[in-house]
Amino acid sequence: MSASPPSTPVRLLRSTSVRLALGYALLFILSSVVLGGLLWWRTTDTLDQAIEAAVIADTRAIGDRLRDFGLAGAVETINTRIRRVGDQRAIYLLTDPQKRSVTGNLNAWPPDVGDQTGWYMASLVREERRRATRILHVQLPNNYRLLVGRDIEDREELRELVFNALGWTAAAAIALAVVGGFLVRRAALGRIEEINRTASDIVRGDLKRRLPSRDSGDEFDQLALTINGMLDQIQQLIEGLQATTHAVAHDLRTPLAELRGRLEALLRARPSHEATLEEVQEAVDDVDRVIEIFNALLRLAEIDSGTRRSGFRTVDLAEIAAEAAELYRPIVEERGAELAVEAPAHHRIEGDPFLIAQAIGNLLDNAAKVAPRGSVVTLTVAGEDGRARITVSDRGPGIPDHEKPRVVERFFRGDAARATSGVGLGLSVVAAVARLHGGTLTLEDNDPGLKATISLGA
Image (cartoon, rainbow, N blue to C red):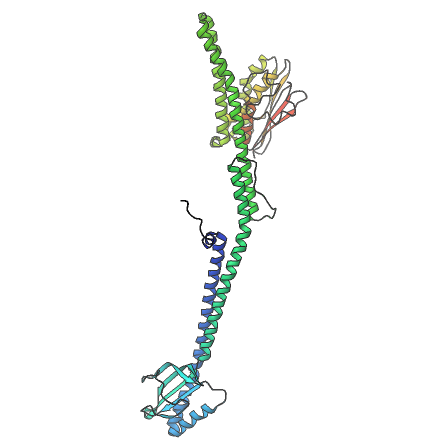
C-alpha cells in the first residue's frame, strides 16, 4: 500500500516560508519577553527602593518620638500619619512586647510576619480585599514592636497587566506570523511551481522550455536568468552532441563501407601481389581517414573542456607563424601559388603554442586547397596589448554568406569544399582554439576569396 500524503498542518510546517515566519514570530516573542522583563525589573526595583526609603524614614521617625516623648509621642505620630490624606496605602501597627496592639490601622499581628526583625511580604485583608503588602518589622526601646509597611497591590496589578500584554502580544505575533507565512508561501510557491513545471518539461525532453521572468529584478528573476543561461548552454551542448553523433555516423560509414568492400573484393578476386598491395594501401588510406576524424574529435573535446589552459604560457606569435609558414609553404607552392608572411617580431601573448600553431595550420591548409595558380596566400599577425589577430587570406572561391555561420559546425562541408579532401572539422577546431583563448573566428569576403581572422586575447 502506498503511504498516505501528510496532513495539511504537516505540509505547512514543511514549508520554508511558514517555518521562517514562525521563527521570526518566536524571535519577536522572546525579544518582547526579555524587553518586558527588563522593563518590569527596573520598574519594580525603583518602586521597591522608594517604598523601602519611605518605610525606613517612618520607622526612624516613630522610634525617635518614642525615645524623646515616650509611648504617647509614638502613638500620636502613628495616628497623625494614618489620618494623613493621600497615604492610604500606609500600614502601621505598634504593639507591646506580647504583640498586643497599642495603636495602628491593623487589628492584629499578621500571621505572615515572624518574630525576627526585617522585611516581610504579607497578604492582608483590607477594604474587603486581600492585598499584597511589604512590611518592615523593627524592635523599639522597651521591647515595643513596630510594623510599618506599604500596600503594593498596585504593583502586582501592574505586573499582571504587563504579563497579560506580553501574552496578547505573543498571540498576535503568532497570528501575524501564520498569516504572513501563508501570504509569503502563496507568493513564493507560485514561482517555485513555475520552476518545477519547467524542470519537469525539460526532464521529459522539451529542451526549449525556459523559466519565465517577470522583469522585476528580484531573486527569482535572477535565478531564472542564471538557470536559463545554463539551460541554453546545455541545449547547445546536447544539440552539438547530436549533430556530432549524426555526422560521425555519416562520415565513418563511407570509409568503413569502402574498406569492407575492398577487403571483400580481395577475398573474392585474389588478385596479383602488386594489385593486392595497391588495395591494401587504399584500405590504409581509409583507416587513416577514420583515425583523422577521431583525432580531430578528441582535440575538440579536449579544447572544449578547458583542460588545455594548463599549457598556457607567453608565446611569440611571429615564431609560431614562421614555423607554420615553413611547414605549409611547399603545399601552397605545389598548387602553383605563393605564401606571404607579415608578422612583426616579438609579438607575445598568453596562450597554448601548439593549439595556436594547429589553428594557423588548419587555415593555411584550407587556403592551399583552394588557392588558384599564380595567386598569393597571405598570413598576417597584428595586434597589441596582449591582443592579437591572425589572418589568412586567399583568392579562392570563398564561402557563400549563407554558409559562413555553419562552416564552424562539426562535419559541415559546403558546396565548394565537397571537391576537396577533408572531414569538415578544420574550422571547428580553429573556432574552438579561438574560444579557448578568449577570442573568435571571423570569416569575411576577400573579393575574391576568403579572409579568415582569429582574434586572441581578452
